[in-house]
Length: 409
Ligand SMILES: Cc1cc2nc3c(=O)[nH]c(=O)nc-3n(C[C@H](O)[C@H](O)[C@H](O)COP(=O)(O)OP(=O)(O)OC[C@H]3O[C@@H](n4cnc5c(N)ncnc54)[C@H](O)[C@@H]3O)c2cc1C
Image (cartoon, rainbow, N blue to C red; front, side, top):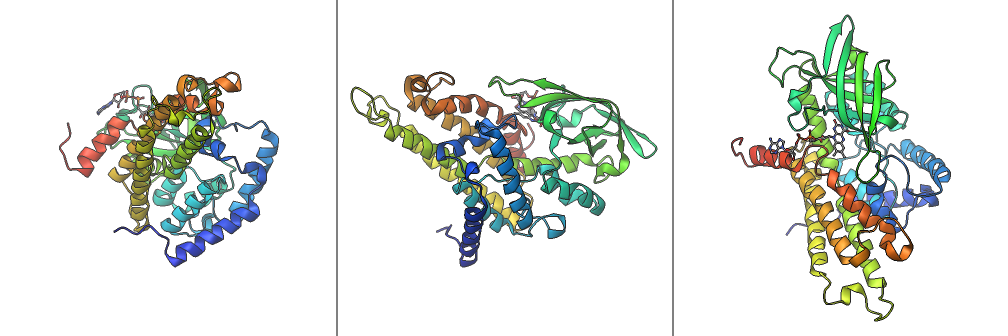
């Protein structure tokens, strides 16, 4: 039998994390259970859903400083770059404790983990500490209008001119570009080479002359992503991560990090608990019965979702245990990503069904918007997550070829 219980060291560490949260987390940041569960789906444009934004922003600063002092923004990184040298298993315990306590986890973007693996010491010293302190906010320049799943066909060109590259081209679906002051981009540095071989992974400032950003508005009304245009943008050659023309492999490491970290099994479980508690508490005004007691209620679906929450947790644990052995999960990350994102959609479908006739209503008076219309919002928001970071079809291709050893279709 697999034993998921903490070892004595893990239990001791869990207590330490809990004590840290209890003494440092500002009250305004501790959300109610139903709010905490939905946070990831409501902050797509970087804004907080609560009305007390100024107070919340100030509290977030205080909370960040407490985490920075402890090295817990990027807990696995070495102390010299602002980390705490924690093992992946300690990180897992920490993340679990934060989620269960409904404390915001302020992490670093995946570009940081990628620099940690492929960057030079100078790049680590220049880019990682400001990331930890929250002074830089990064966006990701992968996709282009003609290059999404077939990313290696990307056309944004970088031409060498002395100590600089000069970049011309366009990226699309760039999440948070309008809020970011830094970007990494995959650019073509050798158009003659086979398509995977002439690409370089570059880091640069979004404030560089020649960059313009145009918003793309999603069907949930969120302004999550953008088009980004480059016109003669100069970037120092020293900002290439890894070898020039070998950036495809640096980008692949980045994607493995991104796919491993999408979705939170504990958060999903919290969402289900919030739904269940609401349904149990809510009573029909006439009959006094809960929706779960009604014969037309598809309540077995709720049980299915709870089973899947356990599967999601097991898949995450597999990824963590690989990281604990110093491995970078590849098809295992794709398994977690495809399961977790499709699971979010199943949760949202089950919830809107169980909430009955008003389950799909987002805005309006309280009696017509159960749970503040959050499930209807999630129903819409969760669609995009099976596309972002590589579509479900692409994840299944990775699992088939690299996981199962099947030939390419
Ligand atoms: C919310 C969100 C945030 C995003 N943020 C960013 C970001 O910050 N930076 C960034 O660079 N990009 C970002 N993206 C873009 C994302 O990476 C691409 O949308 C994704 O890789 C798919 O590319 P595409 O949209 O061009 O679709 P296409 O590649 O044109 O795919 C269209 C359809 O064809 C299918 N398909 C394509 N090739 C195959 C194949 N070989 N086998 C089977 N099926 C296939 C796909 O699965 C899909 O269903 C984001 C996307 C979303 C939705």
